[in-house]
Amino acid sequence: MRKSALLLLASLAVASGQPSTASAERREAILNYQLSLPRANQLIAAMAAMTRYVTSLPDARERIARSLKMTPAEQLAQVEKDPKAMAILKDNDLTAREYIVGVPALRMALLAAQGMTSDNIIASPGNVAFAKANLAQLKPKMDAADRGAGR
Image (cartoon, rainbow, N blue to C red; front, side, top):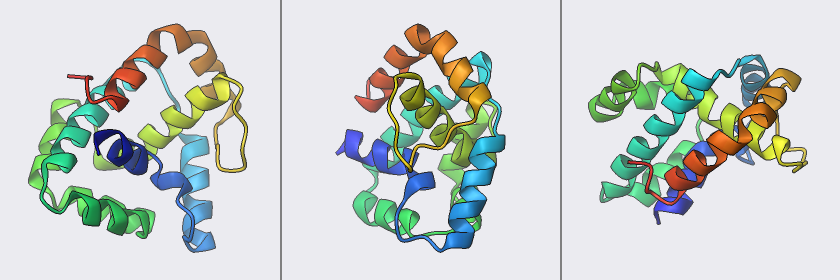
């Protein structure tokens, strides 16, 4: 459940069935997001903690399913009204927007850096170059977070 929840949460930017305006908004936000090593480490740490939190909730599957149908603004509002989610982000020195855009930007940059291509993989050239340069360091951390071991 943890891995699937994490992948669903991290893939908000590529969820199918979104209105084209929301998809275009997500795409632009991801392309404009600039990754750095400190920020990537913050995102991975927050992602691991957020995944543990969301999967601990009794309605985790329903929450994830609802999130995938939300616009970026709705996702942002959902995170901002959740005190525990905001505490996780604050502990990692992130805003809700940085998290909602940054996790998919990081995940997709890492996928692109590994040579994966798809219409759903959105990454700026700068973020792909960053991911390639830091792949050996970031991929194990991301894999650990995906396994729920990123504690």
